[in-house]
Structure formats: structure tokens, C-alpha cells
Image 1 (cartoon, rainbow, N blue to C red):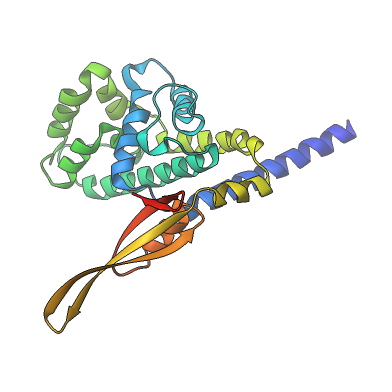
Image 2: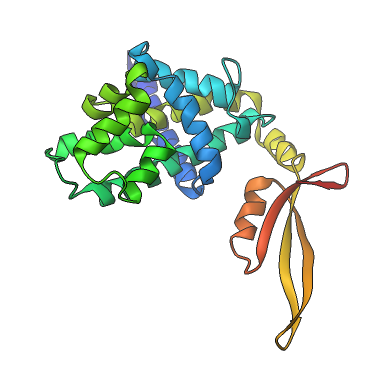
Length: 261
């Protein structure tokens, strides 16, 4: 019994340290690009439609789609990624989801007809990004300016899939469940690699950054100049560099010494 107690305590401490490490890694990653985000969101929403499965099961299925690529249709931006990089991209998806959620929450705080307490408002904001890009953009541009318009828009787009009721009335904990799924998924992902393997994997995915600047003398333009920066170990390292540059940047993958967009 003494050994069991000590082992249980050690496991609790290890779980706490693991969750802390995963959370720190997630927060170090930048949010997913908008185009990739909305494509990926459609995949997540498809797992939640028609109320055929629980949120926990839907998140597991989403991990199978995006990270393991072992079930259903893989979102396009995850195609050909290793499990480890796919997991990182899924974390960036979560970061973007949280960003969209926060933007909507700030925008809709005083929406006419949206009469909810703090908990109900928080539940709505947590699920509303699932409505999709068109509805979110309409809210941000004031094309949807009150709750009746929101109900109508959700009904027109999602009624047949039952997402309208899911979004408006559910206590779904989307961000929490997605983060829990990512925490669990990495335990499976890491079985396939060790520290040395991870380094080799990163070196096998080289990217460069094309920095485009305008060549000019005085007020006369002489054309465009393209400089190549890198190589970087992977797309995410290249993107981090591109964010710091003043010129227009394009991140491209190297394949056999050839720059492929």
C-alpha cells in the first residue's frame, strides 16, 4: 500500500507537470492563419452536426481527422504533415478559435435582444465560432446587428444540421474540450518519436522565406527585388521569421533544392 500511495502521488505530480508543459507549448504558438482556420473549423463542425455524438466524441474524431489522419477527411492544411506537426497545427487552431471567440464576445456584449446572464453569454460565445465565417463576418460588419437576425441567420445556414440549437442553447465547453483532446492526443503522438527523432523530423521539413521589396531611387520605381532567407527547420520557424520582416513575405517549402510554393 505504501508503494501504491507513493506511485499515485508521483503520477499526480507528473500529470500536473505534463499539463503545465503542454499549456506552455500551446501558448507559445501563434494562431492559425484565417483561411486554414475556417477550413479546419468546417471539419470540426461536421463532427458536431445533427447531435449524433457527444462533444467529447466529436473532439476525439477531430483528432483522428487532423492529427492522426486515420479517420474521415483530413483538413487540407494538415495533409502530409507528420503527427507531431499536425498536433502543433491543431494547437494553433485552438489559439485562433479562442481569438475569434474573444473578438465576438467584445463585439456582441451590447447586442440588442441578446438578454443573457454571464454564464449564458459565455456559453454562446464559446460555441458561436462554429456558425462559420459568413455569420461571424456578418456580425463583425453589423449585417447581423441584433439577436433576432442572429437566430434567423443560424436557422438559414444550420437548421437542417441542428447546429442552431447546439450553438444557441448548448453548454458545450468547446474550447475546454478541444484543449483536453489535444492534451490527451500528444501522449499518443509522442510514442512515435524521441528527442533525437524529433530533431531529425524537423530537419526533414526545410522552408525558406521569400522577402519581396520595392527597388526605387528617389520617387522612381525600378521594380521588385526578391531575397531568399533561410533555410529554416520547418514552416513554423520560417513563419516566425517572416513576422519580423518589413517587406512582403512568402513562406515556401524546399523539396530537392527547389523552391515550391
